[in-house]
Length: 355
Ligand SMILES: Nc1ncnc2c1ncn2[C@@H]1O[C@H](COP(=O)(O)OP(=O)(O)OP(=O)(O)O)[C@@H](O)[C@H]1O
Image (cartoon, rainbow, N blue to C red; front, top):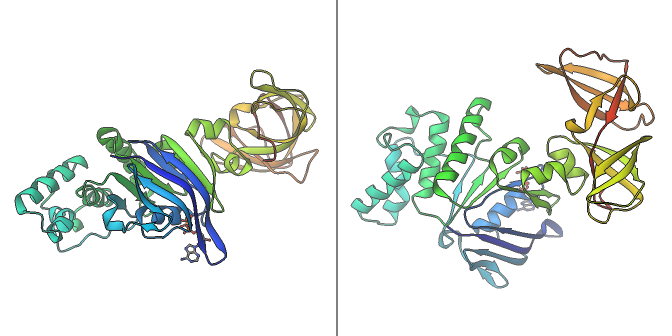
């Protein structure tokens, strides 16, 4: 197992920068998700780590050895990096064990050793008893595990997952999430997991690297991303936080500060050194409470039933240009056309310049 260091990596396609000065250090045995919207550079980063893509600037180090850098590009097959792709493409005419052992056979690994390593890899993904089956006789999740075993049989120092659950249905995704988490716990493999699904990243990863437009925006634990997003994009992207304009009224004291949000004065969490300035604030469900009086007025545009409760969407009465959405447990007392009163009880002031 090995750590991964990405240092100031830029990748240009002509004038366009798909990766901009990305710096990221991943510890030995860590499970890191790379998360971001379509086109943010996730796949380019994965391809650069795997060695399918040359980088324009910076360096990449796996387990202490530089694999990409100025004048240096170690080919993919010499990097000892495994990849589990979204399309797991197994050979239909080969058994599970043959599929897993194919690369070893091509590499002329002796039969006995091959058999032992294939069995070990299948045991790791809990398919130890299924080596003789054909892929057609496996479930989608089992096939994805064969793909994982096929990657593990080469004993990689680092495993990259490229949206491995994207082709699976919702139920199978949940089951496979649990399997991946369990696999990581048992083996301690260093994992870099690419996804655009924030719920998946939050459920699985020790830390998440959020990317946007080729840049790394924030690299932190799921809890930190939720509670202390670095900018409005992260606040929205992680669990759909509400971002509103506000004015910081005082100076930060012990991580808190007094803020005016649409006429309401609220004490919120804030970055160190926050002082009076215009700011964006991120609000989470725990920061909002429906009130009978006071609070901010929200004109309800839509109330959509979401099983067990309603999703309310509308705009602040004082700022019709802003959108605000929140969830309300059943039985809801709100309908389109009404004005809801929302008390704000907390929140997070975004860092300066990130509103
Ligand atoms: N070979 C290439 N030539 C030119 N532009 C490219 C090339 N590969 C990627 N890009 C551009 O780089 C940007 C990042 O692409 P990338 O595939 O890394 O995004 P992504 O975050 O993986 O998106 P998705 O989730 O849709 O796969 C995109 O704007 C894409 O069009």
